[in-house]
Amino acid sequence: MRPILLQGHERSLTQIKFNADGDLLFSCSKDSIINVWFSHNGERLGTYEGHNGTVWTVDTDPSTELMVSGSADNSMKLWQVSTGKCLYTWEFPTAVKRVALNEEGTQIVCITEQRMGYQCAIRVFDINRDEPTKQSKEPLHMFNPVGSKATVCAFTPTPGVIITGHESGKVALFNVKSGEEIESNERAHGDVITDLQLSKDRTYCVTSSKDKSARIHDTKNLMVIKTYTTETPLNSAAIAPNRPYILLGGGQEAMSVTTTSLRQGKFETRFWHKVFEEEVGRVKGHFGPINTIAVHPNGTTYASGGEDGFVRVHHFDDSYYRAKPYGDAEILD
Amino acid sequence: EDAAEESNVSAELIALRKRLVDEWNAWRLLRKKEIGEKGESKKEGDEEKEEIE
Image (tube, rainbow over all chains, first blue to last red; front, side):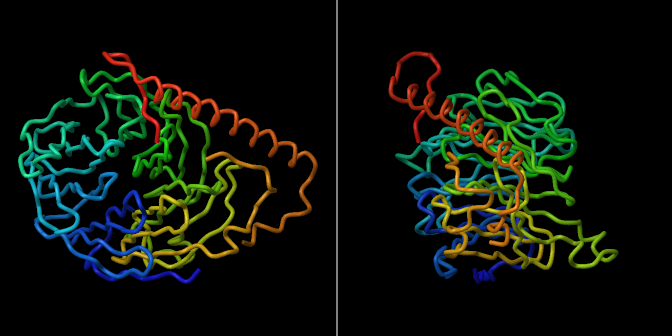
């Protein structure tokens, strides 16, 4: 499983994301650009320039026509994937930390930072797909989550309901129309939730946290289904489709790295058995913490983006498919 | 790969893993069935409906 190294960012990666077909990989970084790569060979297809600060987050629609990004420059941008053209820019009082599209690619949910007298806000926008350069400036819904600020979010399969992860470690379900918290698990994690990724059918999700663990939650009722406990703060967790694995990445912060050996730095992608909650393998590579992990929608490839500024793309080899850790019982996705 | 060869696991562990797989699969089947049903019956109005993949 020789990785392909993608060198196109000058600063650390913040989020990487495969499109729905899996042929493209989007990466965003603190260097304020977004790159798009062919996932099979790592060739760079293009760059999206326009943000004036860290790009924290990206997402694409199911047809890969549109891409949405959120940045520390207090803006959210809608891009035409094929041309690299910025179609629309929404401006906010604070940084955009997370964006996510719904399954149909018709709505965006975004989180803006709590800062300078502004509360953390969650907004939902309709995407005008007919005339993409003409978007509504005002959100369809907006609310301020009660208590701890939100760090990650996604649409659940229930219309009008989003799932959020918070700075306090809380996971919650919100009605976007009313802003009402429908359900919450205050103790889902003991520290900041750093990532939240959905299963293909959106009926469950995995969260990662600085509390060194990752968890699978039922997106219907927030029941914790599984817990994966590691020895390092986690920045990202991804679900491998068609195989019973969860991929985890993280590592000590740069400041504490000098006091430990590289091994203890733990800059490895960890593979955990999804059902048995046991670690089954690790993949080394990055020279700094892993900030973001994404798995190809068919489960054939995974990529990791590091604090070191690199993206590493790994195509799984035969041994990965042959491996049946702990028996050959069929495990549903 | 290294975890593939695990032959000396005890009978208890095998039983535990079987139970974990059964529980997981039962929960997955339930959720898959739910979104399948709700997706098929696309009701109008304010009624909550869920979409299929």
